[in-house]
Structures are given as C-alpha cells and as structure tokens.
Image 1 (spheres, rainbow, N blue to C red):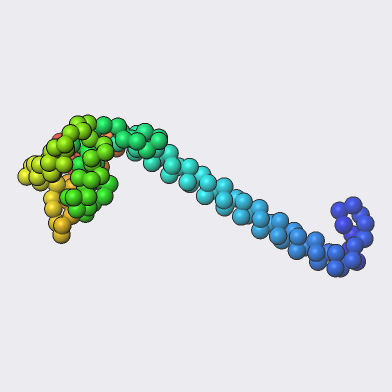
Image 2 (cartoon, rainbow, N blue to C red):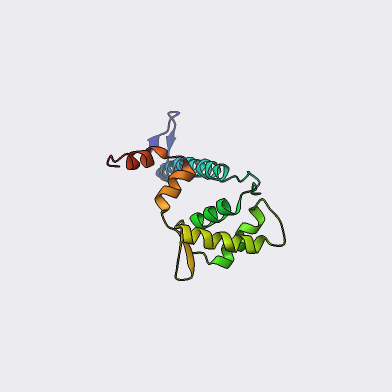
Length: 155
C-alpha cells in the first residue's frame, strides 16, 4: 500500500488505476497540444488562401470579381496548369466582365492571342503559363526578385 496526495493509504489496484489514468491524462494533453499546433497551421494556410483569393479578385463568399478575358484566362491557367482550352473557357465565363452571346468566341480568341504573344503555351492538349515564375511574382506582388533579374544582378 502507498499513500495518495491526501496522505491516505490506497491499495495497489487503486495505485495501478491511478497510474493508468495519469498516463491517459498525459496522452490526452499531448494530443491536445498536437491539435492546437495543427489548428494554428490550418489558420495560417486559411489566411494565406484568403490573401490569394483577395489578390485574385474573389470575395470571401467565393463569387468572382469581374475580370477582363486576359486576366481571367491567365489566372485560371496559372491555378490549373494543363487544363484544356474548352475547360478554361468554361471556368472563365462566370468571371469575365462582359457577358455577351459572343463571350466564348472572345475567350477562345484571347487564348489564341496569348499563345501567339508567348504568355501561354499549349502542350499535350493543355494550357500552361509560359513563364510561371514571373506570373507568380506578379500575382503575389513579389517585384523585388523580378527587379533584380531585370537589372542584371543575380537573383
């Protein structure tokens, strides 16, 4: 027999139960700390995604701000590299400024123009941004790297 915190004597069985409960308590406290770290990590990710959506012109409700055809196409292709033309057009229709019966034709022509200008490339039936690094810098406002590369300094 041993004494508990109150100075009372307890049986070995009760001591064993207390040890099991203490182990379980410690395990639950560790798990709670893990969950709190995970919650903080998810909060950081959510804040980042909200920032990206705000920069992309999307509201918290997920409804799109109106974009021009070029901005809509480059944004969609940047977020979904390898997406086929037809799917890019479908994704762009709800977020473009001009809603007209010729919107599909306008988007298809814009894709062709972007390919001819070298902004997009088509490979294996999918569209890709030709210079993804510059586009990411533009989307996230990271102009310092772009400036150092254009000024001839190593970046």
